[in-house]
Image 1 (cartoon, rainbow, N blue to C red):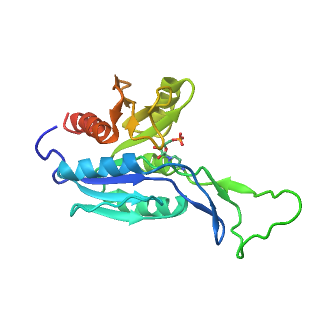
Image 2 (cartoon, rainbow, N blue to C red; image 1 turned 180 degrees about the horizontal axis):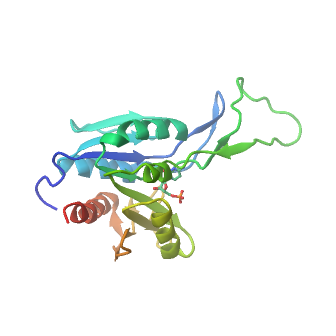
Image 3 (spheres, helix red, strand yellow; image 1 turned 45 degrees about the vertical axis):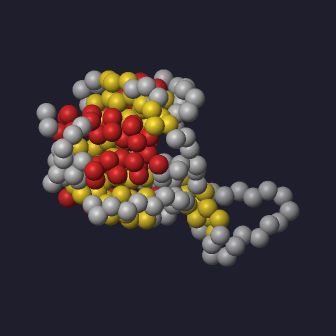
Length: 220
Ligand code: C5P
């Protein structure tokens, strides 16, 4: 992709994990590094977009005049920020590894250890991507899928159920692909179920490929 094909476009990207508080010092989380979302944001800005990057806790930072980084902690905070920006968004990509569950109650004080086990009751977090699909107007909406079985079928199902325009399937079958890795191997599926598979690449390269697929479709 060359030039500034995203000039005048507002892009919303979610990145990283979410942390769900158990008590003042503990949380439930996951190993997402945030790299894929940050690379997508950088690439979008380089292609001319104004970017809102809503990120859960990561060790990453980003300096770009066209990127506004909004740091959040929990899925509920990420949900609120996304919906605040969504009405004016042209393209949204949900690359965050959002916790599906959160502790039903957050203990006010640090939980003391006692003899025996401990049970923590969980409740569902909102599915941010699903909610964006439900309130979709003019936006081009892209999600990620990380599947371990029936990859294509599950990704297609997710694309349709969440009312997406495209979905990026992360292959876990290949070494060096996905979570915590510097590289990734993806398949892009659009809403017409047109499928494109890519080889193992670095995450900056993967970000370019994803933008190329999106740009081809928004200008089509
Ligand atoms: O349904 P599943 O969690 O596999 O879908 C993954 C996609 O949905 C990713 O794009 C992820 O960012 C998004 N997601 C979300 N909010 C959730 C769970 C997933 O935005 N609570």
